[in-house]
Image 1: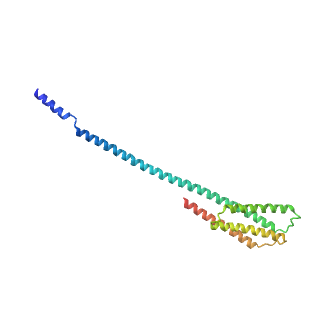
Image 2 (image 1 turned 180 degrees about the horizontal axis):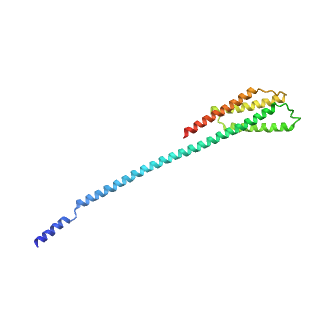
Image 3 (image 1 turned 90 degrees about the vertical axis):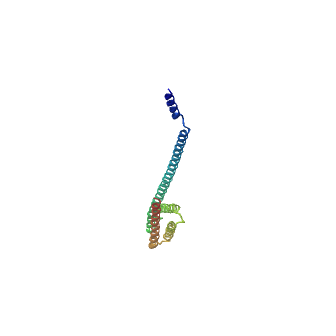
Length: 196
């Protein structure tokens, strides 16, 4: 029986709780939890920065898209108004060169007055679209004003009975106007390309 008691004592001694093992397990568990926490925090920070970066990129793309759309709309409106302006100005210039007495033909004078008014309105609309601080736009404003001044001069000459006008001056003003419009288009496309 002594052997049995001795065996039981040895078993009890080897199976009793060891404080060292508990501390090792506690430290291991704490290390694992801290490591998981740090890993989760780093993952969160990395994901947050990636989301923030993606948001900034998308915001820049959206702004570029809006700016591009508005610049193209502005350029198209400027081209359309310029085309209408010179179509009406050319027609009116042609009317002025015709030796028709407005008193004999009031419909002719009425039509000419209607087109003249439209030309002036269109010129003012074009001028309002332009920024005088930009060189090409300022040149276009000047050409637009020169065209109106020349038109008014021609009306005055016609009222004096003179039907011969300086076609070269008219052509130069028109060329300067459309050259400025071309330069504005080139500049606008360049700005749009830089946004992309």
